[in-house]
Length: 229
Image 1 (cartoon, rainbow, N blue to C red):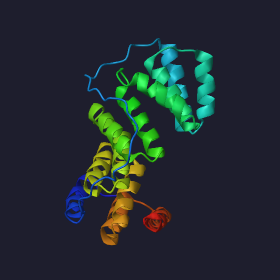
Image 2 (cartoon, rainbow, N blue to C red):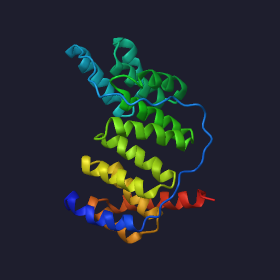
Image 3 (tube, helix red, strand yellow):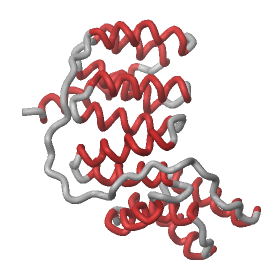
């Protein structure tokens, strides 16, 4: 796979052919006001509690949110980081209202960027793209070097038809984390959706995507195009 720096020229060529679009106008309920606060560190926890929270974070990464919740109840750690993990676990187990309430409480805390991301993901899953974009933009502004937030923001921009900004977000994500395949997949998917097969497959080769991955992305594109009125 070639260095990421070699992708930039191709990226700018892609951008020249991406049309500008406006996000869909979706009626939204009253949302949490977004406040920009200075980045601040969370209070330091005892090493034992930090280790336990790390193990719970790993459970969430492995797709075990119910186990994560059980361990959170067991250790009873009171901190912003523990509450953030609780909100993530609740969201992943389909309990969005409970998760949203916690995220909103954390929006002005030391984990505000991740809380805004959680609110954005809940809004996106509920089909409210305008609110999702608002929260994910706030998350990106708070944590500009967090590649997962850049990817999430780009994906919702793509859903809203804002293809050029979405491309910027995906490229930022892969430059921040060159091995982050989800952003690479989304970048190729965006180009497929635009009908630019040549550039999509060029990027796929650059990122080392295998044939099975490319075929799956093509199927996703076809399904998306059929669902679009």
